[in-house]
Length: 23
Image (cartoon, rainbow, N blue to C red):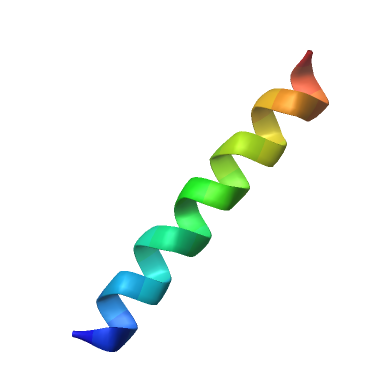
């Protein structure tokens, strides 16, 4: 479970960074 949460958090962070980079 810890792994799944970490993966989701990482994905969210990457998505945010991608959005900022695109902006």
